[in-house]
Image 1 (cartoon, rainbow, N blue to C red):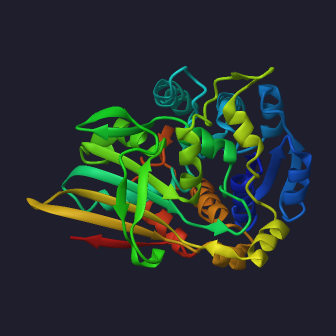
Image 2 (cartoon, rainbow, N blue to C red):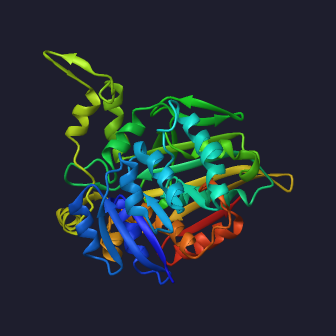
Amino acid sequence: MGKTLLILGVGAQGSTVAKRMDEEPGVEKIICADFDEKAVASIVGELTKAVGAKVDASDKGSIIAAARGADLIVNGLPLRWHGNVLDAALEVGADYQDFAATDALAEDWIDSIRVLYDVYGPKFAAAGHTAVIGTGSAPGLICAATRRAVRELDSCDTIYNIVYEGVEAKRFLPFWWSPVTALSDMSEEAYAVVDGELVRTPAFGLPIQREYGYMGTGPVTLGEHCHDEPVHYWFNRDAWFKGAKNIWFKYGGAGFEFAKPLYRAGLLSKTPERIGDVSVAPFDVVLAHVPPAPKYHDEIKEILDEGLVSDTGCMVVEASGKKDGRDVLVTVHVMAPGLEDSFKLSGLTAEMYLTGQGGALFTKMFVTDMFTQRGLISSDMLTDEQVDYYFEEAAKLGITLEISVK
């Protein structure tokens, strides 16, 4: 008998996972659940194994009711609801997967991640189940690529995770994923590991330049951006990253350049200000004027028909350290379809293709019983065998690695 999956949240990521799993022989039933009934009806209408459910994620009982009988809950909801979903998974005896580490379990995000590892980890282990967090493209795919990179080293000194998103439409569309998530990440100080210590770094600060031949002409500038990877690698640096002492996440592209002057002007502040007779948070005003990311076939096609300014991007891992006593730099390029090719292949944007498909590969690992770990792990804690399986399956989707060792 095949497995039953609950896809909780059928936005860009959840709907892509649902589509991939509809093709899997090891999946018998997919429960597509969201508060947005239109989104549920839309995705259920495209699938053969799916049923729909309306779920209010603020009500843990609502999640539990939808999850009864599920073998795995794939959580594509906003971070604030993750505690309810984790508890629901434990209540119904299901495995768990999400796309990013929640900040809702403690006042400080780092403490919230500690709760995931130290509190929920033992709970899932005691229940005989597996929870895997951070399983999109970044975090997720890039974490598996980083593990593949450090395999070439005896010891690791520095890791760079580099993401450049250069897809730009002719219409005003600064983000191809959740604008509230994008702007929230960009409004915060980032995290990095320097000399073995986790430190805060200035948003958009500490720029570096890189130039890759497939990105067009000239170097691109990348800066600090608040992301999961340095935090997880810091927690796991000795066990999984060969003692890495310096860890950076660098980000750039059209959305980055759009948000940078807003940040400098204080317009990404979430603190309400008095302007005339109105009290309003600048962040909320900006967010109200940013269009949502496209997710439906017809709207993506309309954007492509209007034409693109650019269709570039990159995901790169650089890991430097020692191998056989010599200094070595390992560079891993993740090669994947751009926007136009992603749409031709699957009717998805490049963001949906890479993040959703990247997440679906982790879901497939659940379906094919590749996860032998019990408890909670992040996507940077895969075994070498699991990393190899992941990229063997990714290659079938046109997502490949180019590895250079110098």
